[in-house]
Figure 1 (cartoon, helix red, strand yellow):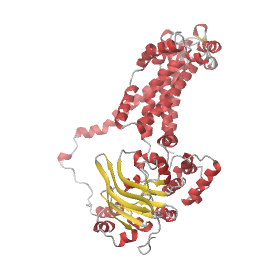
Figure 2 (cartoon, each protein chain N blue to C red):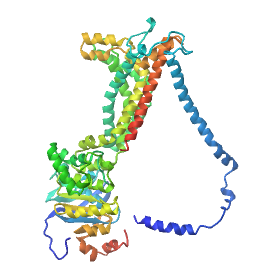
Figure 3 (cartoon, rainbow over the protein chains, first blue to last red):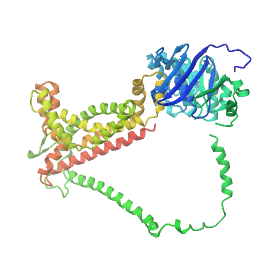
Figure 4 (cartoon, helix red, strand yellow):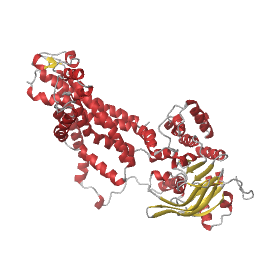
Length: 260
Length: 343
């Protein structure tokens, strides 16, 4: 884990400048500015309704599926604005994968769940698909558990396995960024620790942004932590610093459990 | 989240504080139930039971009546005043000429299956895609409007659809496709029927799509699928069991429909011979407009004119029984699809 003594060597992957996000007249996020470094885990913490999930969904524009919202300001991936025509949402979502709060496998076989993404992008060759599926399942630490029942329905798996399947499914299209929206909130402690181990492995090659309600989880897995409150960024720093010597009183109150 | 350990700690403490009494003290008078309410409570379930038994008895009675009269065609039962027929000459023969003692009902069974099959072919894709539109694509004001319109359409009496077919569709088809020869037959009956059952399918398909978790939609699009790909590759397969149920219920409605079909189908029990003639002489599509008949239309047409107890009359009851059984099979099929839904 990144410590205050070693300087940051990784480039900025995602850059957010003065972003506001409104739904009708209601402002959900306001005046957000922060940078997210490549191959680091950035945790977003804050009380319910502070806009952290909404913020996460801005990075792959998935909120556009359900709501008509207005985003202003600049949100850049590798310096290219994702809202101002620099990149279309389909290409964006291939590069920025997402794992949701509740495991959401499709009602298909395990194999077809993972092959779904590659198929969308025109990979139909059986051999190539087999390789991609195995690779993604291995990266998600699921291969050994499911290699003999790839043709079985994903709905027969445990919650933790389903969530790792969803991670494998996201990895199969080769994303550069992985957004995780409270990925363990529906899981038991053992399944949770497996996902956390996985996060540590995946950050070798991926930029990970994780929203979490669980402060210990943020402390365990992340390099950076951002604390949100009422749609604003209160403080963002190295996780070690946030949890030992936060600059803001409010951050300290929150992580010590005085409100939230 | 940390509610549960707390509450499990609190519960035993509460239990300890309960008073240790043999009997509860009587409730204060203002909270006591009147004698009438107590009695009503005790006996009311009998009223409910009686009503349900009545309904069951009615349905069972209809089945019994149909079976008794229908089977009288084949067995020397009291309802039979003529000769008894063999199963083969009724169910395996296309020769329907009651006045010369031929009672093959295959033309009607074939007619029913052809008309309902065609109707479903037209109504299922339309209905399912409309369901997708209402549930997933339409703006909310349009969604509620469409749902209300569909619910209204389900309730329109079928004779109204029949009138529409008779006065609008028939002349239109006759004029535009058949060089002003009178139009009737399968294609038009199927069109009218499909218009009748589309609202049913739309309503159920909309429910099916609205019942799907939003996370499926999000999950698919988060992988970079277009909206259309999400609908086609994830939502429709996920809704498949309920969509099948919708189609089967539509089919059930179509197969039992008599009025609307009878007004436009042409009522020709000898349609098989006529269709052969058409396919020999005219382009294939002309065959779709052969005047024909179905189980329901034949019942409506002939039942009032046949002497009770005659083989002719009994065979018509047998056709009614067949319809009853077909509908029952369809309903059982929806049960089956419904059960698969959980998987």
